[in-house]
Length: 84
Image (cartoon, rainbow, N blue to C red):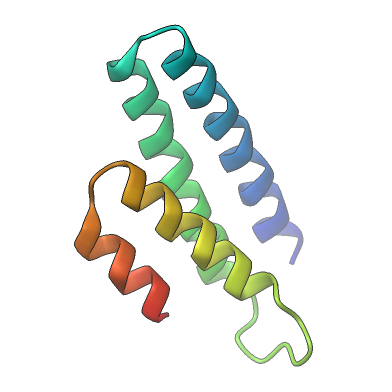
């Protein structure tokens, strides 16, 4: 889980940078940071063990990645991630 947590934390840092860029009105920078966050969040979700009973983290990471996909207008990707 360490690798997944590290990737998730990095993804959240990129997400924060994306939000700041959007507040400043820089959509291109926002999209770039959000795309990086999405890639890291998906990788984090797939690195978590699949058979962790009683843990919600795999679902949280996939949900987070789906939300990022949605906000990048990548709707098919968002649906796929939600279904995972």
